[in-house]
Amino acid sequence: MKRLNLNDEKLKEWMDDYVEKNKFNGCSLIIADPKGDTLLDIASGHADKEKTKEFNSLSIVRIFSMTKAIVSACLLQLISNEKINLQDTLDHYFDNFSNCYSLVENAKNVSEIEKTKAPSIYQLLNHTSGLSYFFNDDLIGKEYLKQNLTATPDNYNLSVFVENISSLPLAFKPGTRWNYSIGIDIAGRLIEIISGEPLDVYVKKNLLDPLDMKDTQFFLPKTKVDRFTDCFFYNEMHENFLPLVKQYENFNYTKDQVTNFSGGSGLLSTGRDYLKFASLLLNGGKYKNTRIFECDVMNSIKVNSLDRDIASIGVPTFAQMPTTGMGHSLAGSVITNPHPDFTSSVGDFGWGGMASNYFWIDFKKGYTAVFMTQLLPSASYPNRKELKKLVHQSLH
Image 1: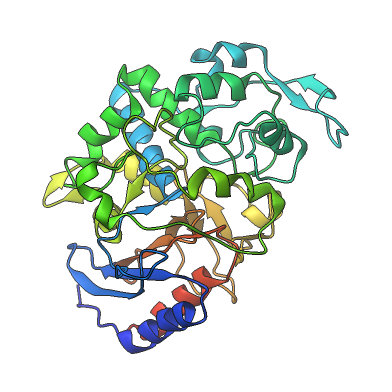
Image 2: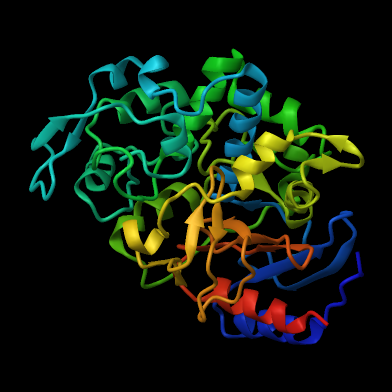
């Protein structure tokens, strides 16, 4: 494969501009080829509010929903090894789903429900399960918020959290819509049930250790506190996100504080560490000639699982990215038909996190990019589509 060359001047200017305008306190961008060789590693700004520590690709950040790709991939790996059918429904694993209800169409309150089939593992992973999120503007999302079901690291433990979530109705009948959801937290609990191991143990043993991702975990060791970044919040963010300020502003992720291993948002990582996972996917599931993910697992990660794009059955935009021409695999977004306002190649895979961080893999051009910063929420600025366009323009 021809080696890619990147013009980093415009990329650095773009990052510096975000920092100088006080949009981001700091950020990093790291890009690699299928061999895992770093093509670019640049940063701007600072990791702390006092501006005493430079932000770089070794800064430890809350990756929030970039946790999803890791945990989804681990569940797919486990299911493949155990020969479990992805169409198995959740009532096989959770008692509450044995008596499953969803809201009726156009429900006005959470008591307007009807009996429905439990969602499948497949639907859980591609966000068509009928579950919601506490920040979603639907009846069930609002009920999660009301009942403090926020998936934060010190909120219950994974078992209790999933028990509470599964006791509520679904927002809609499984398979009928796309709705970003808490589903990957349930996927994390599924890993625990099937493997018999705590989620943090399974992920470490089966993915993080083989990839030598030593800075990626659910808590922050004392020896790494100096590399931990501060968290920042957009001053005009929607009120649904306000509970996160109290939760994350001064939360230190010490081992005794973290009780809930959130499969959807709980991991800490660095740009350099996460690049190893992204490079594994870019390289077809192999790391240094060792196969980590079998071909069937990689197929589930890379291939769109929806019969229509997200805009048709879900939301028109997501974190200021258009969802027309965007599908979803069983681990993240997949571009099926590139939108003019979101520069992409067909088959691009990726996802981001609530703190405006983002990664993607361009299988056609042969590179992966990991962008890290710490501004909540992710829809504050159009940085994802701006960055992706600049990277495409910078390739020569």
